[in-house]
Image (cartoon, rainbow, N blue to C red; front, side):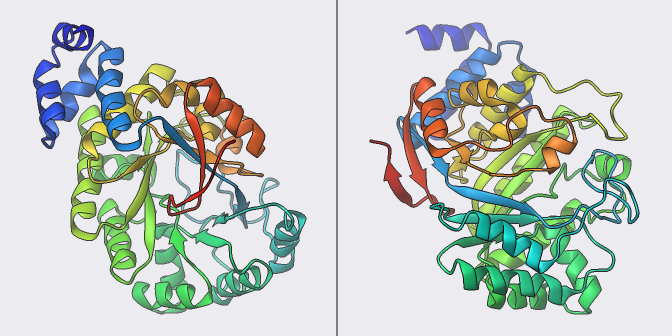
Length: 367
């Protein structure tokens, strides 16, 4: 069998035996997969698992991204989005501004609105509650995916409430799901270098666990391709897997390729497509309890995102409408795609396009 010959030649036949038997891969397996020179062999393994889980389907969502402000006190070195108050690039939307953006797309068949921003030092907690309530009045059937674990910790400090109380207040106002950003790399060594003011990896996991336990599901992310080691990537993935074993609260995993332009780490090389593909593939293989892995076209670009569908990813994200975080760091993709463009991109890659909602319930299959 050609696949087995390729895997033997790449020194991955032992891992193939585990994958075929449905056995869980361990830390050493993850490191070995990252370190192999034959990225195509890693892709073959991930594609086997992807097709076993999802067949020929690739999912997409009709969604809208809204970034309410980029004013932030964290000063993360990898971030081109966050700005200090008074910066020429700083912006802050009012509740009315946000509602205007929702109204602009009121006739679009959007099923999800994604809302994140910086840790704004001055906006009161009531602002975020008002945003959720007012959007729900306009679009009561839309899923509101809003605020990372980092933002939740920030709201708790602002309000004097516990993180649990913050989550409960947000949920009462209309919050449905957390988007999963802010995880970066959990390693304390890395966080000390690139985001020392941000909550720790342990805190991110604790807040995610808390959200899951009170019924708020979330996505999970990993920002890769900066100062982290292969071992720290694998550790990050396995810590997500451990939490998923405990809560089953993660809906989807999103590997985010670091974009160096306009950041304090602009001296670093841009992540290569091969590293992106291998990272997606290893993520699919290690995260055996997270059903979906996203090929985030905003960060990857359309061509690499299409190839990633053969390297373990089963979701392409969605229409997006307006994305600022990746583009301020030099992402060169479009700001939005239409439904017909998403379907075309998926079909060109050789897959069946299936529209989903936030929870991956099927909305419709492409005709």
